[in-house]
Length: 239
Image (tube, rainbow, N blue to C red):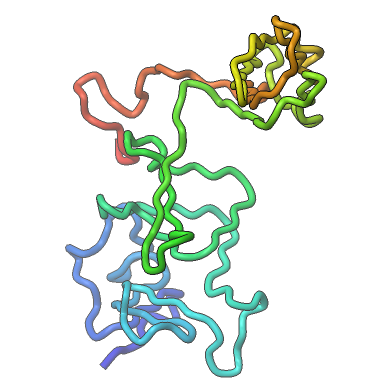
């Protein structure tokens, strides 16, 4: 039967037998007690109204007995940094099957891989099917707007572009509609407007795409990997 031990020492162990010395990390031992840290629990452990199956070493749910979380539906609230070191190659270190809100900097290790940056959504037309799309990749942090050129040939760019883009990086793509037109960009005014002309003097009927680089972002496209030693091995937290 599971027991509680070492309460007076500030260290608690819950489990049938105490952990063996070989199962401990000598870098995190706390005192002379036979387990690491201040709490050791043999799994699986369950907290809250979880699923009926043990899907992990720790299984956490919500609303159990007389208690409900302060934020409805929230099973875990963490104040502070979190590190996840996963070993599953196919699914990655963390799997999220729900909405996720991130306030602050988010660094995704998978974005450093050579795999396409894709997302998966329910198919809009075929029941029981999924739709997978991948993000466009390129050596820049680019944004775009698209639409149809107005009859006066003026493309009004979004107001927020003024302090958001590198104005010198603007490029314009024009596609005549209905018939061939001798279209060209006459000028780009203050990064706010694009003036399109028809060399033949006819009407302008065309689609446009305007691209620009973000002015607040810069990054190296090719660089030396600082995580690899000269012998080709990887730096780790233990070195």
